[in-house]
Image 1 (cartoon, rainbow, N blue to C red):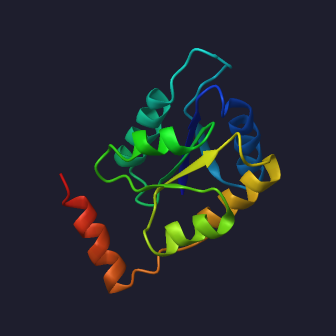
Image 2: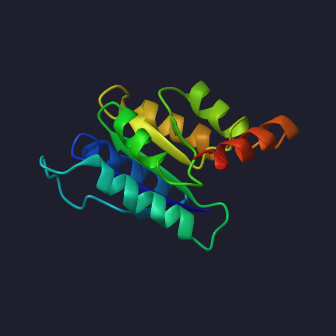
Length: 148
């Protein structure tokens, strides 16, 4: 599974730690930036980079992880892309449900609100939870894809 990860300035430090953690755990991680801390950057550019990579990947299981201060802004930006189901992972339970029920393909983390260890646990839970593929979940995802 390819994992694409990106963050604005408020998520930059946690992103770097998460990239190292996931790589050490054996995941194939592509860091989509930023490559240096830039207090003037904006989260939509990183949402765009990561979502574009997830959508164009040859890997059907490709996932994205995005970070900003609250997780909210970058999640809203990611959900502008048709085919992206971005979910705010403020704890492991929310992350698990977003995968199990909604087949989320992008996890958004609130860098100002979770510790490094919490972020690792949330990401691991999310990455290791399969989509349940219940008929009602499949139907709902199809309905979302048909929205404006």
